[in-house]
Image (cartoon, rainbow over the protein chains, first blue to last red):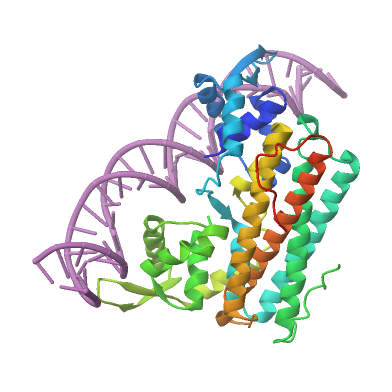
Length: 186
Length: 186
DNA sequence: TGCCGCATGTAAAGCGTTACATGATTTC
DNA sequence: GAAATCATGTAACGCTTTACATGCGGCA
């Protein structure tokens, strides 16, 4: 379970409340890396506090509590991030599963799914390129948080897009296209 | 939950027993797309049988039951694969999470992690290239099962590798390298 | 005969998701 | 004053994982 480390990582950038952490998981973090709802986050913060890895540094208006990482928490985060391959990386990616099973479809159906994948990758690519325009070039330290990740997502989308176009080409050598879908743009 | 569809997809290629299906999840499928143990698979096969999506076609030596997809099961699989973006794609990828949190590390630590990532991507790349050598060029239909996925994995690794090298370059502009790790080869 | 791998299953514990629930503060 | 948002929490259900458990068949 990596949720505690995700929380430590976010709090290492700057202290936040459980509510703010929840919002963070609704953005790119939750979309690409790890998702969690507030009903998982609040109890987990409590456990981390008991273990002495985070602490409440401020209590605000609506009973809000701002958490910050302790030195012990920072050390735990560092240990996890620099640890060996982990070797127990739990993978559950529905999109990748679809790609694995794609060959089970008739070529016309497979083609239309591939065209959709190519289109979605192109859209994601455009989205992240816009993000890069706004944030500018990467800088090190907490300020640059997420820039490396954005570039990573960008290159992932490029790979997916290229793969989908390649796969379409492969399939079209063997079957006439269905012709019911708009072609993917480059 | 995508487990039932993963099972339908595997059975659509050819009928198998629960045991064989379990083995399948220990390979590339479980490593990259979706993991499951036999204690999830056996009950799920029972549920699919009740719903009429699979059926037992043969009973072998050690109480083994060979399952096959029914026409209804094939239709269900097709519906799932060709369905819209699904919009509820659950993402839980520990490796990607590490990349997101990388900026929380000191530059020297971040560099050593990035070098490890680059090395692992290079290793995975070599592995999949070997697979491609064995299986040859892709062909359509159930026979080509997994070839598209292998090419996909290959391109993913290329993207990760390229990203890691790029990230290392970015960080080295701002901090002296730790020098405790072997440099990543290209 | 003994061991290994095949082949399936149950039970308990833990975790995550969904739904339900509450109250305070700000904004209009 | 009403509505939206902030901010946290509990409870129930279902799924996953881990551990435990059993027995047959092939091979040396």
